Image 1 (cartoon, rainbow, N blue to C red):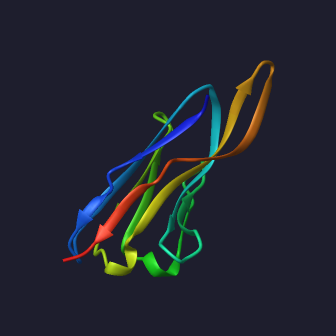
Image 2: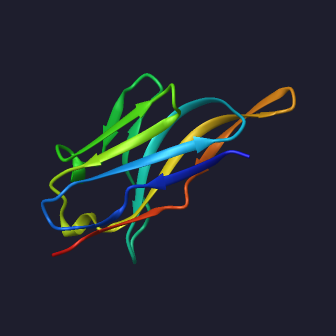
Length: 123
């Protein structure tokens, strides 16, 4: 079955950088939009950045100029380069993708989520 797995999270000091990666696997026909979300304790899950299959990007205002989302369509992966990290960026980060999965003769589209990776920004 289709699976998304995030990696690259960890502990970093304010002003530091991390690079998150999301790998996909399974019976994937195609992947449309991909994105990164985050959810901190006591807060709703929010969109951090998204990227279309054609490479168009969108960013939350809070991360513009600091984060960069990218994808490799040949590998079906998406990445989030996070620079100038702040304590406010501390959260669990989730990979999301709209994927067309093979089910017999049909292609069924839906959103898939990774398990999340913890990012902690602290001195």
